[in-house]
Image (tube, rainbow, N blue to C red; front, top):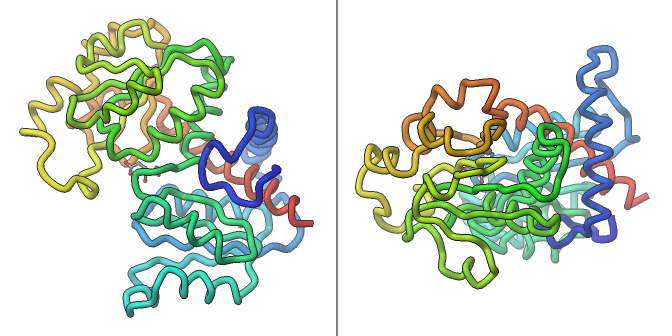
Length: 306
Ligand code: NCD
């Protein structure tokens, strides 16, 4: 990898993305073998600093680091000095003085991870900053698509729901467009920024039209924590219009897959029956692939420092 940090998808070239996917596929196979659980990279120290709550992303980065033989330390904001008034920069300098090789950072403000990366010596990995980007989620989504669809180009991908507040959507858009896919953004007008139209993306305010003929349907949660006022009249109405149920799914291609980065809200953006349908839903695969994908990125960033 050319760049020291991974803050956004545009930090990576196409060939670097292909290299990450290839290495992640190797780790995915190794992780299935119980006898081959540790793939030592040599000693490295990874600190996961999460200023925002997380379950799967934190666990995934922690496991990935440990499987590679690293020393992994988690710092959760609820118990950190940030609660005592320390600034982001001071936190960064404190962590830097502990000489980690990698900092994995999640923050509720867009741009905070980038700011922090300018103050430290080690590599910084963005685990989600505000509604800006979540690059490792997009990369693991991309590898899941490759696994299921056996290709990474010429696909029709509908990203549905609360696009406005979603860093997952932004990273996925950047990545899918690098690889020549047809990306559709589907959702209510007030959750779909007009600026996306200028980028040449297809915008749909009807779920039925948006998923028609799609190869991949990516569902997103309503990011209530980032909404400054009520964007939806009621959950029931939202589900009726924008929730993925069998009737809407039947309009997509017969072999269309359904994705969700989690955490999902059954009966709001997705019908629980679809989430549990293993012929359609790849939600659990995304989680498994996520560990392998993060191992690949940690590996390449550690190697880069040698
Ligand atoms: C996403 C996130 O935190 O941006 N979750 C995740 O990382 N798997 C999406 C979300 O919170 O809805």
